[in-house]
Length: 160
Image 1 (cartoon, one colour):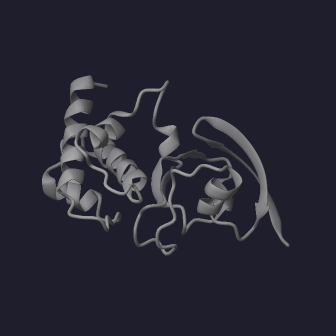
Image 2 (cartoon, one colour):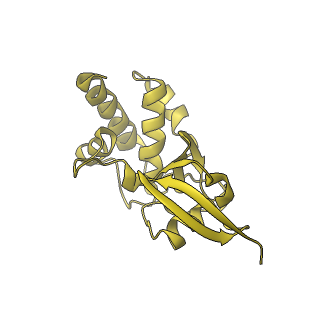
């Protein structure tokens, strides 16, 4: 079996792991690192529940080989909180009831964080477009969109 030794940082922690060359980033995160916040929904990049930040870019971890993590910074949902305090996007999802079953929540939060970094004052349509790669199968998206709007306001009030 062809294996690779990878050096990367995940949620601020340096790691070195030897993994099979065919292992996905999602498998590395869930099976090797035992971080369960990143979900496997569809396995084909359709739902966004496996979204993580890789080198600052939002990616579907089910579609990315673990080898691409070499030398990179990975941020999962577990890495957003700082010193026991939720990230403002996470807090907004809690405050606005933007989560239902939780399967899509980590991907939605990371997509929202990425959107708000690029556009701190998005319109409802821009939020819809920014979250288009993330599916929620529970109900409508109203509470999710309200959560992103609340997060945008909280981040603006907090300043740079």
